[in-house]
Image (cartoon, rainbow, N blue to C red; front, side, top):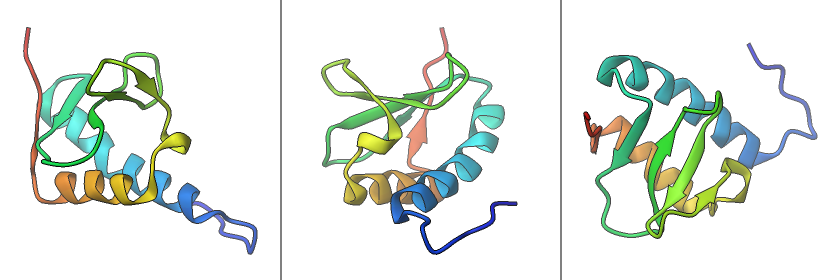
Length: 90
């Protein structure tokens, strides 16, 4: 359980919500990389290979959760809630 204080950043709350949602999806798909099926935005996937969530832009660039635009982060959370994601099995 996370204790919220007055100094808690909204972005941190969104990141924690994402972490709670995505953890079970990794287990469900038996994959460490999840791709999002969304039409707009730069982020195409998230991976847990290095022990923490790292996002990838469409060009293959790595981006950490604190650097993602808030609207795009909410779009990603909506994709997860609405089951608009997939994993490539190799």
